[in-house]
Image 1 (cartoon, one colour):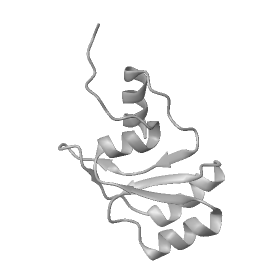
Image 2 (cartoon, helix red, strand yellow):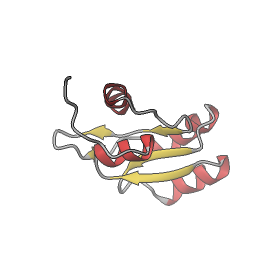
Image 3 (cartoon, rainbow, N blue to C red):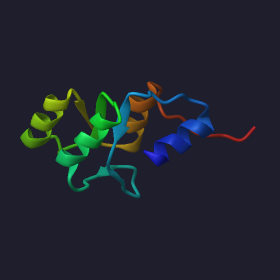
Image 4 (tube, rainbow, N blue to C red):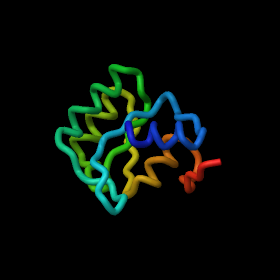
Length: 98
């Protein structure tokens, strides 16, 4: 989430206040697996997030069951650019100094 927040700040894009996310950013920009995603959804709900962004392939039945029980939608992403688009609603573009 911090990496998306930093990129959004540099590019001047607002972040959706209802989205939380988890994942590891790989050197090639892919979003890698992290642990305890099925439990992290409870933290998202506690902080009143309505959508949780997770690495592609981690949306299993336990996560979906937990998410549904607390009213959180789960969205999978493969890359940093996809995560950025979900969180900001904008396509990630190159940062250039002015």
